[in-house]
Amino acid sequence: MVAPRRLRGLTGQEKREPNDMASDRPANAELTKWDPVFTRRITNLVGPIVRRYFRAEVRGLASMPPAGGALVVSNHSGGMFTPDVMIFAPEFYDKFGYDRPLYTLAHYGVFLGNVGDWLRRSGVIEASRENAAAALRSGGVVLVFPGGDYDAYRPTVTGNVIDFNGRTGYIRTAIETGVPIVPMVSIGGQETQLFLARGDSIARLLGLTRARMEILPLSVGFPFGMSVIFPPNLPLPAKIVMRVLDPIDVVAEFGSDPDIEAVDLHVRAVMQAALDELAAERRFPVLG
Image 1 (cartoon, rainbow, N blue to C red):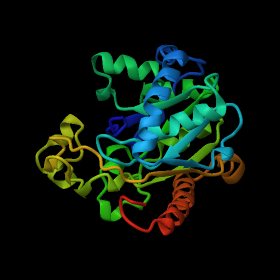
Image 2: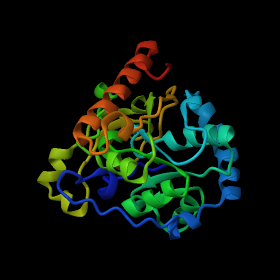
Image 3: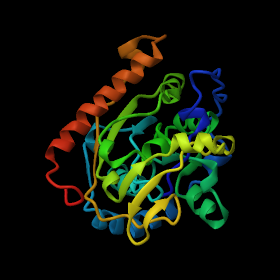
């Protein structure tokens, strides 16, 4: 799965823009494209390959609400070829079945040609407040990576740090749709190659932010060695472990008019503690 870029509805600009959440429509055009038969076919075909290659584990699925909408909030890892979704989705469907759709928010730039059609049919939807609200109110589970590409390209030396770059729109989404936030953490993705720097200062210097390119990441990997986004290196078979944490009912814990920054701090603190625990188990890079 290609890492989404900075997502303006749920993952960017929330501190400066008014909330323009969509109406209460139970569904929209994006959601109608989800095809459970196609999704089953893809997860059954690709899921086992990804799981074996990364020796992947998904822990704590019992913490997921058994039914209804939920906003799964995770750190994002692995650069351009992030494996997060194709590790989590097969395990999710194996437990809950294909009557409960899992939608993943992604940048509009990944929906190109036939690939875009395949992504939509498998539950990947363009990241917007309208689409997220519709998916959650329809009873679907929505997976969001608030850090976007800023997170997916974080340097390997800070690979086990939860940092959403100040993006808090996911909290407003959960409050306004009345669903719990389900934190999830992942470890190992930043070992699939050596991520050296995001290159965000260089991107600003070159004026790339005008084209919504906020980073110019530098990494080293196989088979091309040094890469500045391109050519894209293949991911090393690092062991990846994901862990689903207990749901957070924002209103119940913080009140009907919560301090958004305080909620974000709490969510990230819970995730950081869990990620630290996974890191403590890890004995060697890549090998796990």
